[in-house]
Length: 225
Image (tube, rainbow, N blue to C red; front, side, top):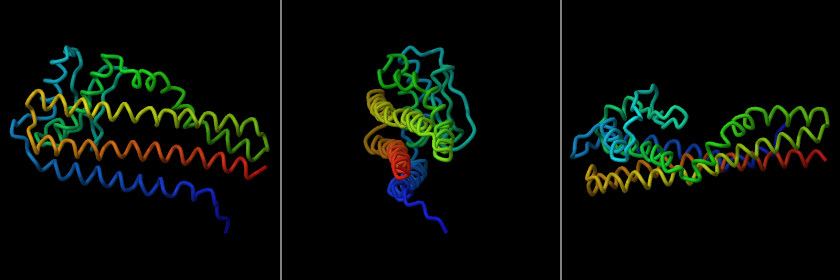
């Protein structure tokens, strides 16, 4: 049986990714049971924070799925999962504020967000086409295709790396706004921070996995020489 030794490069990143996913799920579950003293729902918090920054035209909508919350900069709409939209827990409020942070970044043209949005098409194409070109190049001995595949995957890696400051900044904004607006207090704020910190680790894990995968591609291409 053939064993791909290059897969060893991925193992540490995959372990971290699995741990990060478990951490975010368990932390969200824990703080979704802790109600906020203000009693606001995630949707209400998002609306309050958006309006406070003059973003009256950005609607807050429901979206299916768990932890599927996101801000869409193309359509300028915030979408919150049912648990966050209707929930008045510390976890729901933290997530809603985090997504509002992205909307504020968009308004202020936060540089890492602008860069990330500008490379989305290249990153999407790179992540989909890179392996196809890479494998075709390896099978038919076309080193040019191999190099193009690696280059395209590099674009996807850059996207994952530039995502990190975007996500960390959105969380920092969220916590500061929640505190300044008096929406969360003391331990409630600490709970929201725990939820957002756990969520941030999933992006760190994604970046590490992408880098490890890139190293694996380079290793495979050179081992064939």
